[in-house]
Image 1 (cartoon, rainbow, N blue to C red):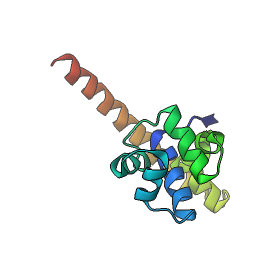
Image 2: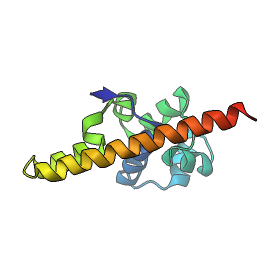
Image 3: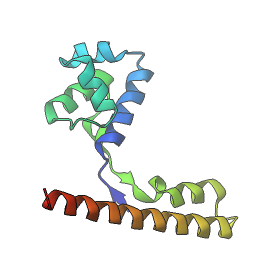
Image 4: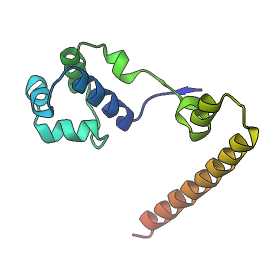
Amino acid sequence: MARLPSFSEIGRRVKSLREQKGLSQEQLAALIDVSRPVVTKIEGGKKAINSLELRRIADVLGVSVDELTCPVNEEEETLVGRFRARQNGEDPILAASIEKIEGIFKEILGQVRLWRENSEENQ
């Protein structure tokens, strides 16, 4: 199942393309008219990229906005998906174990979200 990329995933794409072009963060920042710390935040997924920045980055890096924001195949991005891709289903015990671990992590993250929501409501 495909989903929209997170800001971290877009940032990793920007960083990879910037490095392929041989540009420093400072050079990219100057070309898109922002400061170097803004580029650092974009590449680290710590800043939401507005449409103007996205267009400028795409133009400078010689790609389309669609390439920076193309959907992510969720199966390939999950732990189970990566293991399946690597081992082609040859070890069903490993795949089952990874699925159990992924389920545990999802439960933990759900509990953390509930705890945060309760903490915010009580403040």
